[in-house]
Image (cartoon, rainbow, N blue to C red):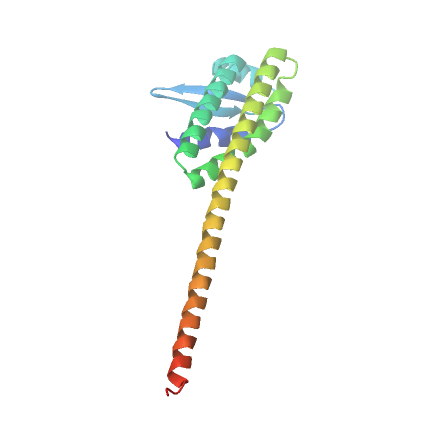
Length: 173
């Protein structure tokens, strides 16, 4: 799975400001997400570029499904660093999605679909956080056990050295 494409799309969503909308660019061989910045001519440029809310929401829903699959892959494969990076990107994108939801507040269906996307992404972020926290806790437990064993082995070695010194000092009869 290519995490970089997911991160790129999440970064684009993060860039949304109040009243901005998303556009889906269809290029030969690829489809990309872009921010359609709010302005007086926005409706004309959206019409000209063939941007519409349905295409944008379908794209974000597919993106969310891909993030879910990638999250499962990250957790099952114990990819901690990628999990942390993806979690941070999801959390940043949630702010943009809230702004997009506000933009479409008068369209109850689109607003509801965005709410479902937000809830799903929050849940995925929580799963990634629990995974990374559990992994870091496990690593800390192993390190603490190793440190305790090393300290115990060091004490045993010191006790053995002291016993050898005491035996060499004690005169024999």
